[in-house]
Length: 132
Image 1 (cartoon, rainbow, N blue to C red):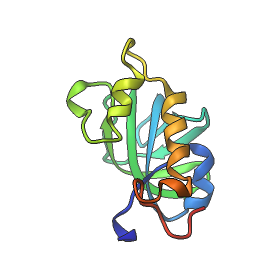
Image 2: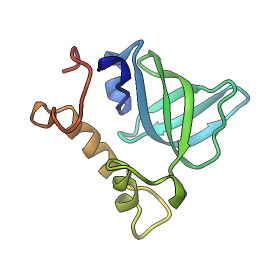
Image 3: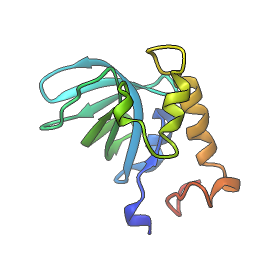
C-alpha cells in the first residue's frame, strides 16, 4: 500500500521525504516559467519545479516528488480556491479553514498535517512505514 500513499506535508517535513510523492498545501508567492515559490502551511518557502504543470490559483495543493528539503518536482496541482475542488474528507478542512474568508487559514491546515503524523491516527491517515 505504501506505493500509493501521497502524504500531506509542510515544509519542515520535506527533509525526511526525499524521493517520496507528497501533497503540499500552499499559497503561491511567485511564478516563473518553470518554477514557483510557495509558502507551505507552516510558513516555510518551497521551490516547486513545475515544467508542464499549471498553477491556476492562489492556494493550491502540489502533488509531487520531493527532490530535497526545499524543492518538489510537481506532478500536478489542485486549486484550493474554488468550491468545485473541495471534496473528500481531508479537503473539507480547506472549506472550514476559509469559512468566513477568501483566504485559507494555513495554521489550521498545518495543525491537521501535524496530527496526521501522530501514531494514534495511523488507521485514519496511512503513512510511509519509515516516517516518524
